[in-house]
Image 1 (cartoon, helix red, strand yellow):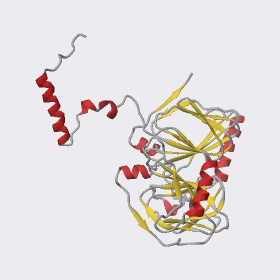
Image 2 (cartoon, one colour; image 1 turned 30 degrees about the vertical axis):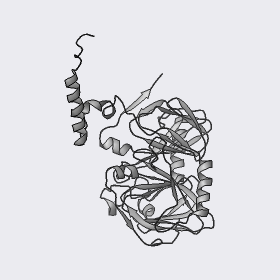
Image 3 (cartoon, helix red, strand yellow; image 1 turned 90 degrees about the vertical axis):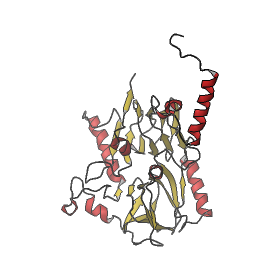
Length: 360
C-alpha cells in the first residue's frame, strides 16, 4: 500500500508498550484508541427497543401489593422498567425512569420530595389522590399528573380497591449529573381531602386564560392534572377538522397534542416532554429517526410500533422504549391512542436535536 507507515522496530514497540503502561498508571487514555466509541458517526445507544406487557406488569404489581408494604423507607411500591441494554440498571433509557406504581385499598404513600421531576399517567382505575405541596389532586383514567422537582408529594387511596399507574421521572439524568437531593416529609399526607378538582386546576385550568396573580413564568407547569376529557376532546376535534378538509392533524389520520406549561408555552417540565397521539384505524406514520429517547404507553386500542424494522404488536397498557436515533413508525389496527414521554427538552436545550424522516 502506498504511503503506508513503516513497521515499528523492536525498540519502538517496546517504547510504545511502556508508554501505554505509563498511561494506565496515571489514569490516562489516549484518544486515538477510543475515537470510534467516543465520536461515532451517528448515535449508538446502549438502550435497546423493548416492550413490557401490561398483562404481565399488572399481575406482578398485584403480587407485590400482597407481599410488600408501602411506607417510610421503601417509600413507594414502584417497579421500574429496566432496559435490557443498560446492564441491569433500573432505567428505561439513559435519561428516563419509568415504573408501574401500585397502591392498595386505603393505603397511604408518605410524603417526600426530591430533585427529580416526576409525573403520573393513569391507564385505568380511580380512587387515589396525589397531594402535591398540600394540594390534593384526583387521579383518574387518562389523566396526566405532574410532580415537578422539589415539591412535597404523597398518595392516598380512599377506596377498598387497589390502583396502579405509570410513573415517569428523570432519575437517570439527575443521577448522572450528580444533582440529586431528597427529603422526607410527613408520615402521611398534609391534606387527606378528596376534591374533584384541585386548587391548581381551579386557578390555571381555563383554556387561553392566565390569572393575573400568576404572571411570573414558572420552570414547570403550575397545573397539577391534565384531564382526559380535555385531551380526548382535542384529539377528536383534530380528526373532525381533518374530515372537513382542514390542516389540523400531524399527518393523515394522526392527531396529536403536547402537554405544555401555560406560563411559557414550553414543555411541562424542564427535562421531560409529554404528548398524546391518536391514529385512526388503518392509519400509519412515516418512519422517523430522532435524537433523544422516548417511552410510549398504549392507552386504548391495538396497533404496532415498528423499530429497526421489527414489528412490535401492542395493546392497552403495553409500554415500549424507542432509543435515540432508532427508526420507528406507528401502525393502527383499531383506533390507537398512545401516551408518549421523552427527554427532548434536554436534547433541544443543548442544541443536539436532529430528526430524519425516511421517505420511500
